[in-house]
Image 1: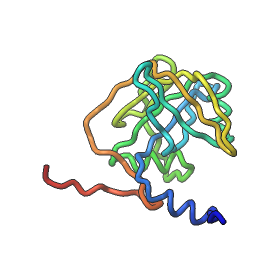
Image 2: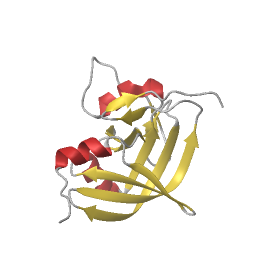
Image 3: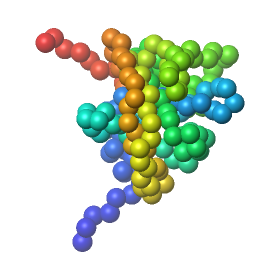
Length: 160
């Protein structure tokens, strides 16, 4: 008999895979920016440059589905407040600064910024995978904001 996996055990096990944290951004249709914190961002192909994000139904999902474009900002260790802001835990009147792109805004000060045009969607249970061609990207030097065991994590860097 095959072992069964309950959702709590799966969640605690998969949380042991360390991930970077990114914010997916898109135009909100009213001249503003909508964003969501994600850790499901993956490079799929170098030729052509293709990435994937995974989203549940919600405002970000709807806006990307409607206009076919999104931005991804890979957060630096100094951008923990950005992660909180875009996951709905807003403190005070602070608001992030954006870099205006060719099609979508991304976050100023992030380690890497990507502008992406959706090329394919795949429905998987309660999520949609958005596969997208990268039309523009840039990067900066810094250390990543990471998530491990359901908490922010600072990697310990050793001597090389």
